[in-house]
Length: 220
Image (cartoon, rainbow, N blue to C red; front, side, top):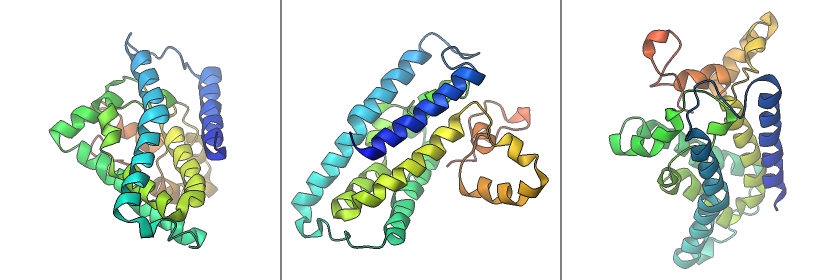
């Protein structure tokens, strides 16, 4: 197993442990009978099948269509390769997510992620299988890895998944930071750079009238 996969699993397990200790991980307040199975199947399908398949297919297609590009970016500096992933993976996922909330048939693929009546790290991989299969970001990442940026992706994906997992946790780890006066300017920047529980939970809200929900915002 690759080091980055082990690192992500360890981070995921750490957040699960925190939810078990300080919240309720196995039985959420508004959980229905099918929720556990939906999340379990979604997690196994993405991590064990969909994502590896897309990365493999992207490399295979590139090898057929553009064999000369294999490893062409291998000597790029870390910052340049990382920036490419920020644009072609993270930003593409942002737009895919945003469009999925605007186009009816796409939202049907994304709706399982929002059907849950609770927040938890359990929701991280809760999506329709085809939502990920059609996600441009995964295909772009596969292409960049084929072009020689695999070592940079290993670092990038750990950072990205830590942010995503942390944003879905029902433990509002960022809330105390807003209460520290000296950190307010820092948090103002942080919440505009990454998703955190305070910002992303609003996106998962159910009713605009509750005063905190911003269903059409906080996309990524």
